[in-house]
Every structure is written in structure tokens, then in C-alpha cells.
Length: 527
Image (cartoon, rainbow, N blue to C red; front, side, top):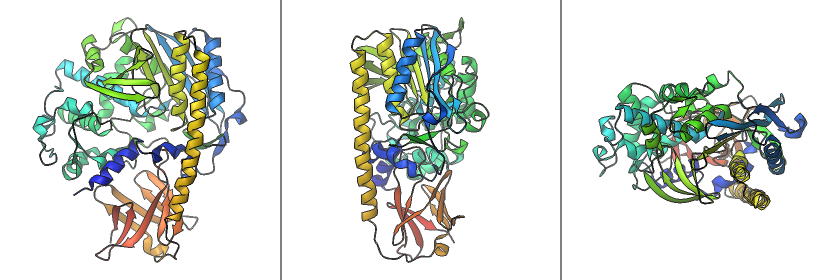
């Protein structure tokens, strides 16, 4: 049986609901993905706006954005688009999408969107529902007849809608983690995994990737269309989003932004974006601010763009409808409801509809017919810039009288947060080292190499690398192991800032089998 405590911990790790998760950006520059490629933004020249799309107060907005980037020093690049009514009134790139080549960011620079993908999936589900291809209020068992939920929960009583609105009464933390991080669970194995490892949950809103992933899987079983083609064919193509992709490999054939981690000294370190194996229906898309501006226009205008009704008005209304009520503060906004992949929130008494994805910002104000997209290539830390900047742009465009004080408050809070994270980082790494035994290793490198298996989380492979150090491979994740003491090692397997360096220990279990113990997650050495 799965361990409930570990499952809860993994959910918190993935969604940054632990204190440790808040300090990770300061930690991850030691990650094995961030080898020796580190840069400073000022080495590429002057920070300036790039692009001429839109004519809404360019001097004012350009200066506001460049000042914000300079004051935070947390992102190499930003691309920004502002929509009013059915027009793009402002779009620019700032900084550098690639610091090695000093490539300037532009409005057609491609960025990984993370959970903004959920807004595309939600609209696609609404479209299929309105067309009669699926019924969101049917039980998920009608689509996935082999699904076996935990004891006491009948899949015939759980709707498809409950999954896409994050209220399904069960949860599979292993599937949630594996699809986003190691990418080592193919869709063909979803049902088998859920049947064995899912646990009971309550019916309160529980944000994760799991519900939307299961929704997309159910839709795929019903329509025989996989989630990648569903989003591409139902959303990107009809919306004219020609530079939007559900494949990293395809996106990287064009002007894809290089992903960076930032450190406290103003350096930016190259890190991994994603592999296609790590892309999934709840976080598997790449786009540009030009394309996201079109998406905002469609949402602001009930599915119309370029003089045509691209999406049925009723489907857009369905996606926007408030289906779960919340009481959740995020930065300076108060989320009070969730629809199909879109939040409804209050910001200064204005309705702000949105879905963010880490550092990717997408939002719109229906009452003002105003919307903003801000994208960054600074993984994790970029979120400190994009969301605060977007709120600042709304303040400017809506002529808030205390704009300067709002900006200073946000910048001050960011500086305070970073300083606090540095303290926590130091304490965490100290504790990691101090809690490790100091005696000599019992096992040689030769004894430790091989394949280790945990049925819930998959396979880890230990080898000796060219530097004669132990190397761990976990699906698409990789880390050189740092010896801490005895048979414990430090692994840094998260290239995106969602999980701190972790201690793993090699030992024999009660049956005499060599195991890799990752905080209670046991991977057994395979003969």
C-alpha cells in the first residue's frame, strides 16, 4: 500500500506548498543541469525594448518595464503583450533570450508556459462538451471503464468535471510527480498506476496536475485523440496561434528562449527546459506573447477574433463559468472561483480572470476589455517579476494614482523575500550535512552501480561518470552525486527550482537486498 505521508509530501513538493519549496531558486544553481554556463545580463549590452507591435504609450510602458527588470535583476528576458478590446495595443521583448549569443528577446520568442496549458485544456473540454463529443457531468467510468478508485469511492459517482475542476475525491501523487518531473510514466500506464497507488482525498478544491491529466486521458480514450493533438487541433490551429506547440522538440526548431536559473550575485545559469517525455496535458505547451495576445482576444470577445466566431460563445461562457468557489490569496489578488482552467479573482475591486504557470503570466479583465501576457525565461525566480509587473501594468493602464508606491512596495517585498530565502537556504544545507553520519562508506562505487526500482516512482540508474563520480539517472532527470558521509549522497535532480537538494542513502533492507533510500521511498537494486 502507498504511504499516505509520502504521498502528501510529494504533492507539496510538486506545487511548492512547503517552506523548503520557497527557497529553491537560491539553491538550484548548484544543480547538475547548471554546469559551467553562467552569464551576466549586462555582458550583452543595454537593456532595451525590442519590437514595434502596438502603439499604446510605448515610451511610458517601455520605461516602466525596463526599470522593473533592472531593479529586480531576476530575469534575462521578458516578452510582454497588452490587449485592449480586440486589438494588441502593446507588445515588446526585453533583455536576452540567449545570453551566450546575446540574442534579444522578441514578441515571437517562444517560452515554456507550464500550467497556463490548463486554460487551453479547459477550453478544449468546453468545446467538446458543447459539441456533444463528451459530457463533463458523466462519470469518468464511462470513459475509463478499467479505472479502480480507492476503497469506498465509486468511479461511477465521480464526474469528468470534478477532475478538471480539481475536486475529484482521490489522488495519485506518484502519477502527479512522474509525469512532470522524471517523465517516466507513459500514458498507457496511467490506469494501472492509479488502480494500485491512488489514495482517498476530500472533495475540496485541491490544485494539482492530476485531475486535468486524468480528464485529458479520459477524453483521449473517448475521442481517440491524444492531448497534444487535442490542444493543437481544437485551440492553437483555429485560434491562429501559429507559434504555439505541445512539443518541445518542435518548439526548439524556432526562436525558443533558453531557460536560466538566477543566483544572488546576478548571474544566470543555463538549465534544462523540458523533454517531451515530461510534457503533459496540465503543463505541456510552448507559446509566444503574440499568440497569447490572440488567446486573450478570444477570451475577451466570447470566441471572436479577426471578425470571425472561432469558438462558440456558449463554449467560452462554459469555460469561464464559476464552478468551484474559493477563498485563496495569491500575491495581491484574491481568487474566489475556478472554472475550466481559469480562475476568477478580485484585484482592486476589478475582476481578474487568469491562469498562471510558474513564471508565465496570462490574465484579462473582462469589465475593462483589457488583458496582459508576460513571459520570462528565468525559471522560478521569473515569477517574482512577471506577476508583479503585470499588476503594475494594469495599475498604469487604469491610471491608479499611487503607482509609484505600489511599485516600491512590490520591489521591497521581493528583496525581503530573497533575503529570507538566503537564510533558509543556508540553514537547510547546514542541516542536510549535519544530519549525515560521518563514518566511512560501506559500499564501493562498483557495488552501488546498477538499476534500482520502486514500483510507484519508477527506475533510478546509478553509474560512474567520466569524472569518476557516481551519476544518478531518473527518467529525464540526472544528477552527479555528492558524498555527504557514510553511504549517504546528495542529489540535485530538479532543474526548475521546485525541490531542494535531497539526501539519499544506500543500505541493505531486511531481506539483505541493497536499496536506495530517498527519504523513505525505497528503490531496490535489481539483479
